[in-house]
Image (cartoon, rainbow, N blue to C red; front, side, top):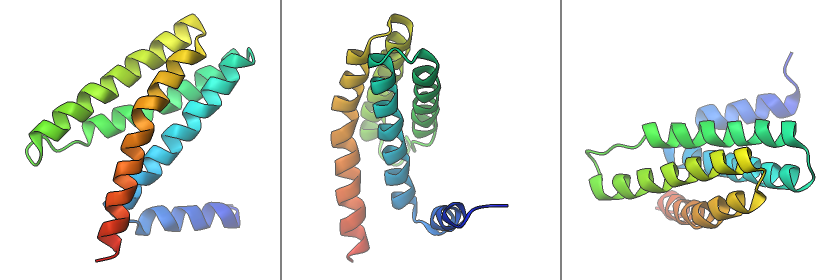
Amino acid sequence: MLKTSQRYQAVQITTASPGELLVTMFDGLLRFLNVARMSLANGKRAQAGEAIGKAHAILTELTVSLDHQHAPDLCANLTALYEFSMGSLTQANLKNDPTKIDEVIRVLAPIREAFTTVVRQGAGK
């Protein structure tokens, strides 16, 4: 049986616009990146590995969901950033290096902010 908060979250996801879902995915991605960074810094390898795996899965989903026919240049740039991020996460996991995760956060946080701004502006129309 689902808890009330889980039911609320499920309703939010099923009724969200594509833009809101994108922002939600970035929120989850950044949350997992922060968990991974803190876990690596504190020597919690299993927890870090799990968070890195979840972040990697979100990046994979973001990559495959790009519509290259609609905005080819933007999609090419985002693909390159997502692939850089996935490579950095792999290196962070292999080398126990939280600074690699910091690099990913530094690259992806502004993208999340830009998408959030666009979604909010679209909602105001």
